[in-house]
Amino acid sequence: TPSRTSDGRSMKAHSAAWLAAVALAAGVARANRPDFREQIVVPGGRFGLGTDHIEFPLDAEGPARPVTVKPFVLDKYEVSIDRFAEFVNATGYITEAERFGWSFVHEKALDEAVLQTITQAVQSVPWWLPVDNASWSHPEGAASDASGRGSHPAVHLSHADADAFCAWAMPGGRLPTEVEWERAARGGKEGRMYAWGNKLKPRNKHRANIWQGQFPLKNTARDGFKWAAPVDAFGPQNQWGFHGVAGNAWEWTATEWCDPARPAPDCRGKQAPADAGDVEWVKKGGSFLCHKSYCFRYRVAARTKNTANSGAYNLGARCARDATPEEQRLVENGSAVQVGAPEVGNAVPPSTEGVTDGAKVGYRPGQHAAAGADEL
Image (cartoon, rainbow, N blue to C red; front, side, top):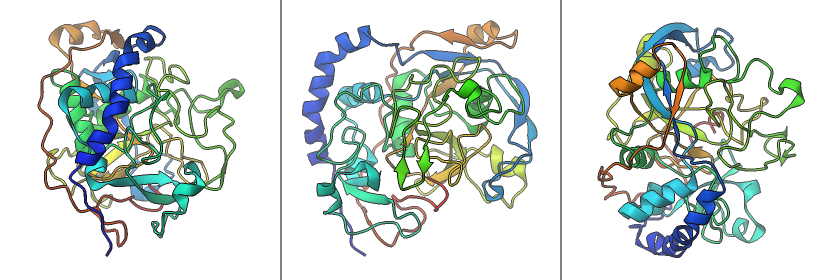
């Protein structure tokens, strides 16, 4: 099986010039947009997780079941490229995509020169192509960069990358569990298909960045975006003020995926150690590549998975933390409360030494690869 390995050093150097440009322009840029570090305190309580209107039985979407969650704090927005750049600039962190030397990109996002260099694809999802040097700062490969896209979600993040960022971004920072994520996405409302209600386009207005047209051949971009959009592009998607919980980029959670044949409480409530490299993790929210005919997973109860070291053009994150006693008191009435940006944490990113196997063909579970045909 052909493979490509990398120790990450060349990609770190390649990113340095762009990081310098980000730092130079940061003050002006921040003055003209929201602070994407804002967070929302989510009230605890009992709610219905999952759905009785099941679209993908093998995903263990349902049946709906009551769960209880404690108050917690969740990012208002998906992690943006600018925020991730600050993390890399401060720590020197090298993502798994950079260490592997490649990541997955949708074929329609690539120019002809790049396409001519690619000879392999994933058999079950041939539009996903392994692109050399694709990463968070070079979303379509080495010839691309993230200039002008600082407000877009940081993608090509593995589970470990997302976890490391969250640990650095705030004291006690972590990924949300699936239960927490769905609690926040529902915004205090029960039984709704989408974060905002049951109609995809209320009053004929687009509420999320998803695929329009014929998937995977043509995206008409009627929602205004062909690929990723700024993390605040569609405004709040529910009454608690969360942006981008439907569409745009998939978001990792801290909940382990397990065999859906197991009883739902066991399958959906388990949380595994974050250092288990071969674990499959639940991801939520859908992405700009989701269409009802193929990946109808921008529904709030929808869920799917990826292996821990996977990364892709549409896979990002959102961070959480436990609520302080004072914050818990703020939400005792059952309403969410927005809070300001947290202090940056001092956590040391976990080592990614030894990430060297960048096989592009002969994919198997546990490798840096796309999951199943209906998962991305």
